[in-house]
Length: 325
Image (cartoon, rainbow, N blue to C red; front, side):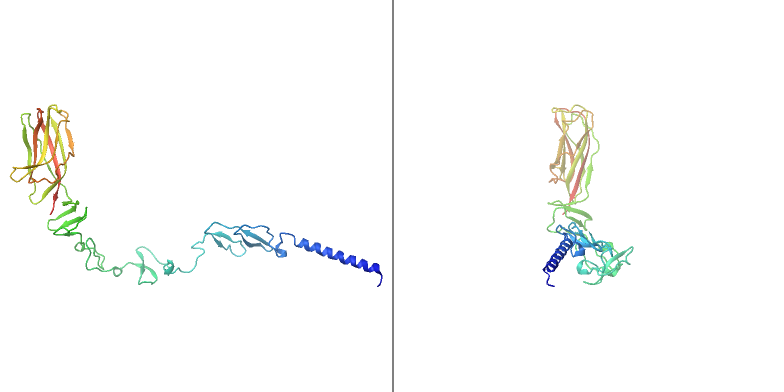
């Protein structure tokens, strides 16, 4: 075969075949490369995207989700997804004590009156009824404490409040204390011990004419074993004639000594603002001396402050506590 034309023809065919093969390869490698050719078929991505098989010959992107979501399997043949971990659907096993669990399966336990119990440090948690032996037994109690025995009963004899026959040496304001020798609950006001209970003395009604310049409306004996501490004074008055800056009564509440010779003012008011023949309340007038020096008796002293105001009627009440030492 020495024909040169034949050789030229064969070379032309060879080159044409190479060109055809090159064209087929370019077509097979067209972008994006398909899964059939070893690619993904996807030309762009976002940070966080995940690829998964969405079909036998297809890949898809799972777009990233918000912080805190987990990748959850959808099951065989189902695409995965992002979501929250369900404690009842995605978790198995028993959470140990070191991880905040109880190290036990409690699904079949519980009921009314049941409690979580642990027999010793590090032991598994169980659910059972609380019994007497689960509570510690104390033989003494701190001040204000309660002793509970194994029978779970709280007897009155075991209640140990702040109590005794003398007050503590360094009390704080508003401390409470029960004086067993006196049968009185007391509180500390920052200076002295006072009874929790408040006592009172009240006057009856009395009339005086304008000719009386000075008179005692009432006199009451106070307790000799305790000193009173006056908290509040109140009165209701009625005068027969005009009261003003020229005609009014002055009422003085005072403590008197045992012989009635000396007095100490507790509080006072006057009727200068009263309306004639109208009952007027003098509620909570000022206590000038809560703890008067003379305090064996309680006395109401009535004087004509000015002018001649005429007849006078008054009801009075003093509220006080007892100073306990």
